[in-house]
Image 1 (cartoon, rainbow, N blue to C red):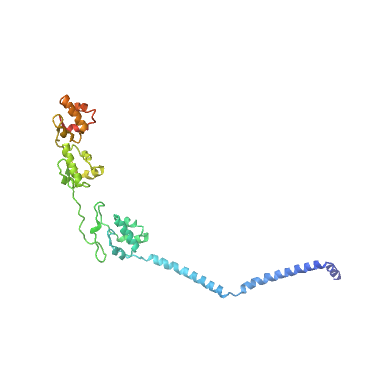
Image 2: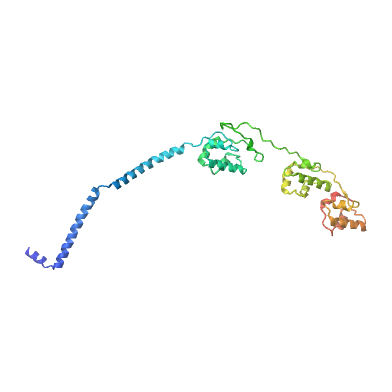
Amino acid sequence: MDEFNDGFLRFSKGERVAIISLAAAIVILIVLSIWKPFHQETRPYGFHALDSLIAARQNAIDAQTEKPTSEVVADEPHLTPFPFNPNGLPEEEWRKMGLTDRQIRTIKNYEAKGGKFYSKNDVKKMYSISDEEFAELEPFIVIPPMNRSIYDHSNRQYDDKGNGEKESKPTETKVIAMVEINAADSALFGQLPKVSPYLAARIVTYRNKLGGFLNLEQLLEVKGMDSMHYQAVLPYLQFQSVETKKVDINRDDFKTLVNHPYLDYDLVKAIFKHRDTKGMIKNWAQLQTVTKNAGELNPMLESYLKF
């Protein structure tokens, strides 16, 4: 023991302080490692922490109860449809079925621009109506067969309870009689689609100048009769071959010849020059030679000339 004390005492004062400080630090660390977990487990919560726990618990309860509630609401239909034709359906009837004012405005804007519902799918295409709402409406949509070109929904009506469509008069369609182009007057031509009274008068005037039509395509030569108008009237036209009124190439005066649609001033001038200097023109081939420097002859002109 005396030897140990003698060895320990041999450390310098600074070494002894360092050893004692290290030992004290080790003891402190051991005590803290034991005391801290016990202190955390037994430390009481403050009122603020308690409020947070209660709020978190309530949020969890609300989240669990909201989900089934929303599912029940989604399953319940929110529209009250009845059999209806969407074409021209009054705003009040749409509103009775549960549609919002915004949805109704969208539908009415579509109709105002000329839109019509020809099938249930046309209703489905309305972006303001959701797929779920369309599923509720679809069984009640009733759209009678109709002709897209003549349908008029203005005569569709519904009873006061909105239970269905009242019996209404069928849409009246205009019956267009067939027109024989070499016999019809301007009044008959005026009944054709896209033919105004002015165009009808020009058709008759042109026919008289020609001496009669040789085919239907000659209508395209009338001023104002373009391909669109021609295609519109073609289903209602008839052509019967008639004897055309001819002009006498050797005896008619200058005014009569130049008034024909297939002759112009230069051609008639060449014809009269030949008549005055060389005499009569005997046939179509000679006429082509006489007028070759004055312009090209319409091949159909031959049918309107008398030599």
